Image 1 (cartoon, one colour):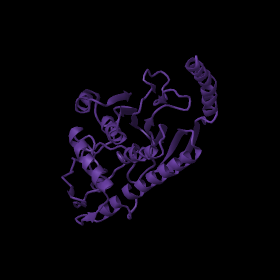
Image 2 (cartoon, rainbow, N blue to C red):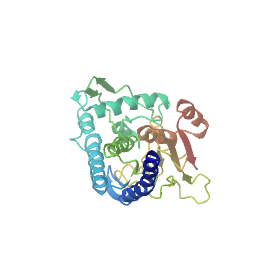
Image 3 (cartoon, rainbow, N blue to C red):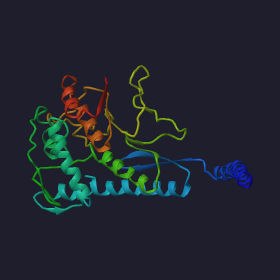
Image 4 (spheres, rainbow, N blue to C red):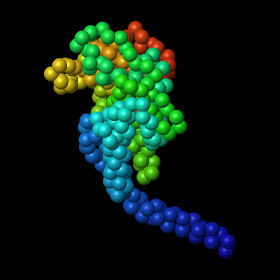
Length: 307
C-alpha cells in the first residue's frame, strides 16, 4: 500500500507541475519580427528582409550584410581606379595580387563563358567597341584570351577591359547571405538590382512570392521560391555614354558587340545567385532557338523569358 501511494502521488505531481512549467516557458517565447532595410550599392537600390525573434542579431546581420556588399562594390567595380578591377583595366600587362574573392569570380566567369557558348563574357573590349562602333556597326569580336591568372596574381592584356556588371551583384548577395548563418537566422531575403536570394519563409511563415514581370497578362508573373536565387536581365534604359555613342541598352552581346532585343526580360532561377546573375545575362543574349543549349549545360537552373 505504501508503494502504491507514492506512485499515485508522483502521477499527480506530473499532472500538475509539468503543464505549469511548460506554460511558463511558452510565455517567454519571443514573436519573430520583420526587419527591413533599403540601401544603395553597385549603382542600384537593394532591400534586406530579416525575420528573427532576436532584434539585436537582426540589426547586426543587416549592418554586416550592407558592409559586405559595399566591400565587394569597392573591389569589383570597373568605375574606380582604386578597385582591383579598376587597377587591372588601367594597367594592362601589369600583374596585381588580388583577394581570393576576385580570383574566384574571374575563374568562374571563364568557366561560364565556355558553358554559355560565349554568351556571357566579362571582357567586352569596351575600348575597342566604343572606338569603332560608329565606323562599322558589324565589327567582329576581337576578344582574345585576355586574363592570365597565376595563383593569387592577375594580369590582363592590352585593349582589355573587365566588367563584372553581369555577375558582381549575384556574387555579392550570395556571399552576404552567409552572414545570416552566423546569427542563426533561418528566414531572410536579399535583393539588389533585380538579383534576389531567398532563405526560409517570409514573416507570415509562408513561402515567398516574387513578382518578376509587370505584364499582367503573363502566366509566369510570379515565382514561389524555396531557398533559392533569382536573377533577371532586361531592357533597362540608360543615358547616353557620350554625345557620340548612344547606347540605350546596357547589355551588350559579347559576340556581336551589339544590343540584342530578343526579349523584354530574361530570368534564371537556381541555387547559386552568382550563377543565376551570369546566366540571366547569357540568356538575354541567346536567341530562343539556342536556349536549349543553356538548359542542357545547366539542368539545375530554370530559364524564363518574356517577349
